[in-house]
Amino acid sequence: MAGYFEEMGWRELQDGEQPNHLLHMARFLLDFGFHGENANGEWPKLPPPASREAVGQIPEVTIDSNDKSCPICLKKFQVGDKGKQMPCHHIFHTTCILTWLERTNSCPFCRYELPTDNEGYEAFKKEKKRAEQRKEEIEILHNSMFS
View 1 (cartoon, rainbow, N blue to C red):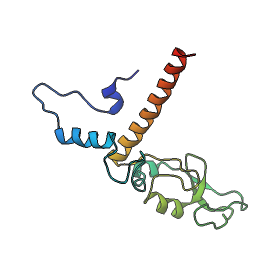
View 2 (spheres, helix red, strand yellow; view 1 turned 30 degrees about the vertical axis):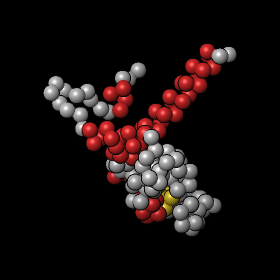
View 3 (cartoon, rainbow, N blue to C red; view 1 turned 90 degrees about the vertical axis):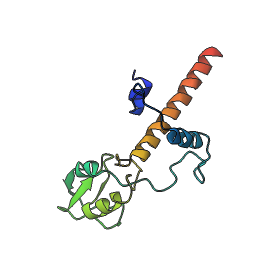
């Protein structure tokens, strides 16, 4: 099991190193919901674009049937057309999905998220996942104690 610092991608302070008190205040404000419109625990705006590396790894596929259409532009695929297949297995016209991923990091059909280059958003996702795990662990602990 990874320790707290490894899990969060942080490191302990070195001898003589001072903590960044502004970061502590910002963290306090985020943890207690004093950050404006985002009081519901969600990212306050559209997620950032997908990372260039993740977009570059999306495989190109050849369309083999014309009974499906692109979920973005809704035009029917033609047999032999080239498209991109997301990790969630949804297929899009290449220009459609690349334009989409320049704006946000998720599949427009199922909201499967690709990694981003935005460190703040990635930390937000990691903290949200960690909060869900803590909630599940507390539920398990509670049930083991009171059942």
